[in-house]
Length: 173
Picture (cartoon, rainbow, N blue to C red):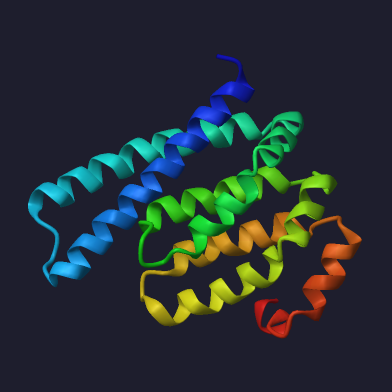
């Protein structure tokens, strides 16, 4: 498989896995029970597999042309969706998605513009402060959020302007 085909396969696998997380969460919520040990083992195994796929994806999108191809595959809305799913998506997967977001837009003005159009600066800024109130172990995730926001804004005039307009900009700096 070439890199473009590999990215498609990875995105399809990740999308299917998010549905599994949703079903697992919904079934344990509807029964009112905690997940069984089998569910925990399955989720741990799936999380490990997804982490490996996300690392591979990050390696692919380090190249600017593949980063742009990833955007054409609608990868940016997927990543933004994953990082916002605090109750469904494990923290390690969300952190990996934030790392990919930073990698894909770093020094890549067309990708930075697409993220800007998707409202990423506001999403990341809100998420930064939500994370600070939800967990005492959120500093690693907050660092990834700042990394992604920095890569999105860096050397992009419009993004810098939008960042400065976000109400939390002074607190983020």
